[in-house]
Length: 454
Image (cartoon, rainbow, N blue to C red; front, side, top):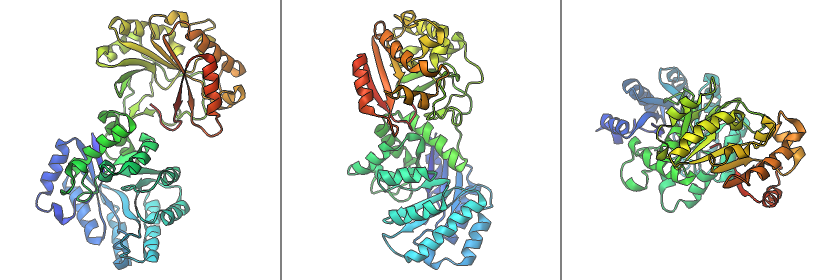
C-alpha cells in the first residue's frame, strides 16, 4: 500500500472527476490520501471530501501565499474544523519567498500561529518552504520538538538532517523523478528510508512519466519507484516503509503489526531468530522501535525451526537467506543449523549477521559447526578500539568481548567462504582504523549507516 500525504483534491481541477481520481488511486494501490487545505474555503471543502470518501483524510491550514488576507475569524474557523473527524494535521503552513504574495512578516506570524495551534491540538504540522530555508529553520528550531512533515522538500542534505533532528519527516514529490534532479535525489539517498514519506502535491508537479499533465494521487507510484531505486530497495520495501512512516505521523494507513518470523528486504529473505541479544548497544533502537524497513520484528517468543522453515517456504525465490532479526542469532545455534541445513538442501546461499560473540557465548569455537551450512558471515565490529567497543556495545560478557570477536573473525575465515566486518559511520569512530584492522584480519569491510537499519 502507498499513502499520498499531500494532495489538493479540493482544487477545481478535480471537480469534473474527483471520485474517479480517487478510484484510480485505489486501483494503483494508494490506500490513503491526505487532502490539504490552503485557505478558509479550501479547508471547509477538504473536510467535506474527507467525510465523503473513506480513503481520504484532511489537513487544514492557510498557505503562506494566502496569509495576507487571512483574518482572526479564518483562524478561529480553522481551529473549529480541526476538531472534525478525519482531520489529521495542521497545514500546509510555512514560508514562501519565491512569489512573495504575502509579506515575510505576515508569513512568519501565520507560521508561528499554525505551529502553536498544532501543539495545542496535538496534531502534526505540514510545512511548506520555498526559497526561505534559513528563515524556516529558525522558526522551526524555536518551536521544537515537532511532529510533522517537510512537504515537497527542496533543501539540501544539511537542512534535511536538521529537520529530522527537530522531529520532522521528509516528503518528496514528483520533482525527485525529473532527469535533472540529481541533487535532490542525492539528498533523498542521504536520508534514512525510515524518515521518508511520499506525496504528489497534485494537481501540481506531475512526475516524469506524466510530466505536463494534471497530477493525481495514483501517480505517487512513480515517486515511490524513484525512491526505491535511489535507496537500492524494492518497490515493496519503499511502499512498506513509507506507509509505516505516514502512519506514525498522521495515524493513517495500515502498518504491519504482527511480528514477522521471516521478512523480505530487496531480494533477500531474513529469518528473525530472536529478540534477545548479548549486547545492549547505545545506537540500537531495539527497545524503542522494533521495525526494520517497515517489518515488525518484536517476537513474543523465539520461533521453532519448523515454524521458520514453513515461513521461508521455497527459498529459491530469494538470492539468499539471512539469519538476523533484532537480537543476536548465534544465541540459537541449533536453530540456525537446522534451518540452514534445509535451505542449503535447496541450493540457496545462507548468511548470518552477527555481533561475533557466538564462540564466547557458547564457551567453545562454533564456526566449524557452520562449515557447509553458511556461505557468508557479517560481523558487527563497529570500532577498532576495545574501550570504545565496550562503551558503544555494552556487552554482557564485559571487557573480554572485543578480543573474543576478533578471535571469532579469525576462526570464521578458516571455514566460512565469505567473512566481512562492518562498522558504523558514527561520530567518534575512526573508520580508517577500522579498515586497517579489517585488512590485518584478512576479511572484507563494509560501512553501515548507523541511522538506517536493514
